[in-house]
Structure formats: C-alpha cells, structure tokens
Image (cartoon, rainbow, N blue to C red; front, side, top):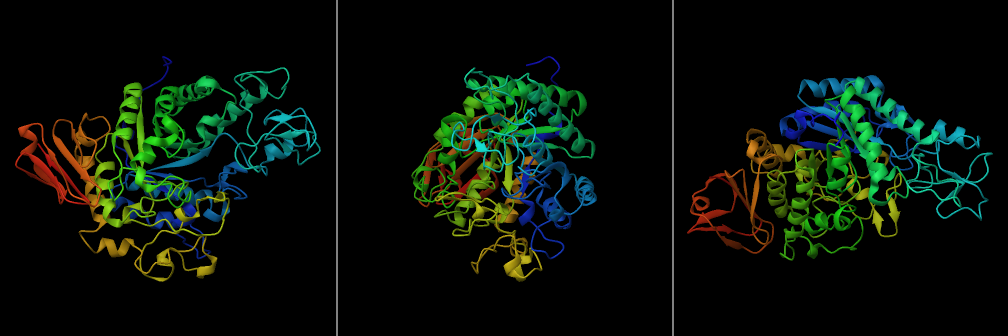
Length: 533
C-alpha cells in the first residue's frame, strides 16, 4: 500500500447505507418521476429509520437509455431531478439530520451524446475513447460503427450507446493498434478528468462516490493489476485532497478492490469469488430479474431450508483475511440490478430473519429503498430505460415507486397513473411506510430497532469479532464475545446445542421466536434472536 494512503474515514465504520433510485423515490412536482425535492421532503423518514449515508443512483445529465448510467455531462444534474440548487438543498438538509449523501460515478464510459464522444466521432486524433479502423462489416468483435465522419468504430462498455472511455490496455498487440498503453495521452487525460469530476462534487459537500463497473476501466488486464494501480493513484489523490470522502466499488470482489484503493466494495450477485455464488447462496435475488436461472432452493434464505450459510461465511472469511483494517465489505439487501429480498417464493415472514442477520454481521449494511417495508419485486413490467438486458433478464420490477401510504400512487406522485416512471405494485396488500409506522411489530419498526442496536453496540459493527457456531439451520454466531445471534429463515423449526454454558444464559435483546432452553437454542420457523452474554 502506498505510504501516502491515509486511514479509512472514521465515519464509514458506523455507516448504514441506504440506496435511493431517484426516479422512483418521491415525486415533488407531479410529473411522475422522482426528484431531489421529493427526496428532501422524505428525509425525516430516513432520519427516523436511523440510516446515516444515502447513495443516489446516477443523477447527472443523460439521455436515459440506461436509466442515467449513460452520462452526457458529469458536471450538470439531469433536469428531471431539479437543479444544482435542489441537490445542494438536499445535501444541506440531509446534513442537518446527520445523513451524508454519496453520488454514483460512472467512470468507465459515457453516453454517445456526451460532447467528448461527439468530438471524438469527428476527429481521428482524439484518443479519449477506444477506436479501431475498419468498416461496419470488418470491425473487430464488439466494436460499433462510428456515428460520425471518423472512420472505423468504437468499443462500448455496456450498451452500444455507452462508449468505453480509454484508460488503456494492460497488454499491447501490434496487430491491434487500438490497444494503447495505460500511460498514453488519452488514458492520462481520462484519469485527470475523473479527478476533476470527483473534485467538483466533493467541493459541493457530497460525501463520496459509489463507482459503477469499477473493474472495467483498463482493458485486457489479467489479475486486474493495471486497474488496481489506476484506482490506487486516484485513492492517493483523494486522501491528499478530500481525506473524509469515501469510495465504494461496484466490483464484487473486496479482496481485490479494497487493497487497490476503495474504502468498501459490495458482495454482489455476480463477479468476485465464484462469480457471485456467495451472495446467491445467501439470498438469491435473481428470482424474477433473471427468470428462474438460479432457483431459490440453492440459497440459505429459502423457506424449505435447502441451503447453507457456509459458502457466504467462507467467502467473507477469505475477504476479511485480505482486507483487514484497510476497508470494509458491504452487504446489500438488494439493488437496482436484481430482485428485491421479497421476490419469487420468498415470503414476508423470512424478511425479519434476513435483516436480523444483515444488521448484526460484520459488514457495512446497505438497504435498498423500500426493502425496509418489504416492497416486492414486480414481475412482467415492460422494458423501460434499458431495464431489459435479455429475454430472461428484466430489472424494471426492482425499480418500482416507493410505497409511502394508501393514497393514489401509494403517495409517490400526484401524476396520473399512466405517467408514472414505472407502475406501482398492483397488489392490494402492498406494504406501505404509513401502515407499518402505525404498527410497532412491523418490519419497518424492527429494522429501525436493529439499526439503533447496531449503532449503540460497537461489537455488532464491522470491526467486531465474529465466531460462527453453526452455518446450517439455525445460523448462529457470537459477536464481540458479548452477543449471540441465532437466525432461522426456514419454515421448519431448528435447534442447536450450545457449546458453552455462558451462551445458554444469554439475555434477550431483540428476539422473535428464538429461546435458549436446556443448553440449546430453540428456533421456530422464521425466527431470530439476539442475546447479550
């Protein structure tokens, strides 16, 4: 690790992240699309819940062919969300409530409507993007024909409308002259541009960035060596200029990304160890998003009890051994790319054990908006702003409007229903914030109590120790030698003989069904228990 690198910002260890898909959170002006003012109006919900760090999906100017992940201006906000002053007010009002706001940084590509790309499409000497010679029928694989007067074509990073920024290739090939080295003029200019964009927003009071497709910058990079060097360089700059800012990676492999320079990285349904198997083996959020490509029966949070927490625990132990004190792994309930916790056959009864686990495991918890009330993945929606990635992969169902109350459009917007960004969950028993606020025993109140317990109890945070007692049913572990956690997310009851007498004498702190009797943890179906030792 470079000697210039400073410790992780102290606030991050206590972060409870909350991801907001801004189009779908709260609409203040009745146009059917969520906006900054709508988020500001709902900050009291987040403050009451106890979250202290908000991550916004991309809110930069964009043609929205990929829901804002196709940026046409990194320094301007999209008019659909309001103005720069509206964002500044959101940041200010969040700060008054002790909530930091992070932005989503799309680092590896832009929109094909970005002025940079429009200029590159006319100038053969512009090396900001990756260009190859040839005609439409003779371009290298994956390259897309030039839309301008420049001959040849460009390399996209995701959709064809998202040209890859040129950060160079780790391996050059004389037969492929578009493979520029990472220290060529184009890659150097793009690294400088990344610093300029980050500096602009951080100086306006933003707390940091979640970086989209953070692994995708340097191409053909075995072992991600040159990509890690790039992020290490940026982290050293960040430490010197904005030491309290945080960088979170969408990489899916914390054992690589955190040593490279990120403060945290997410366990994801793809990428990293075994291509996302640890997360899919924990709670498989592919059901619905990706048809039935992976069945629910392969995951631990399965009502029929067909899984094991072992693969996730093994992956976490491996990651933790590498990253140590350098940063954190983050554990999301879901995100905008995959189904929610409440998807497929997973019932509402399984959600309390899921949150009891997520908010007591030594990772940074990230709650996807609406998961705190058990919002459901809504299947069968049409493609919207690039939500469909293939015949079996539709992300729209995890992006539906937040359900605030029982008023029209669930309180999300006053627009006619046919003008909403996406349809509201049509089920008459859909959960709402208002209904759950009114009932002390709701999922929402439980999540609030668990967040408060985590904040008040350092042993339950990401730096406290963990001893796994059992990774089957029930899942049982000890945090900081002071708290016993027992989780049973299946329908059938489970018991576990406790290996030490002190464990059996635990005092209930937050429980639902689990009891300690005769030297055993007795866990009825869909139960959990947190006990002080």
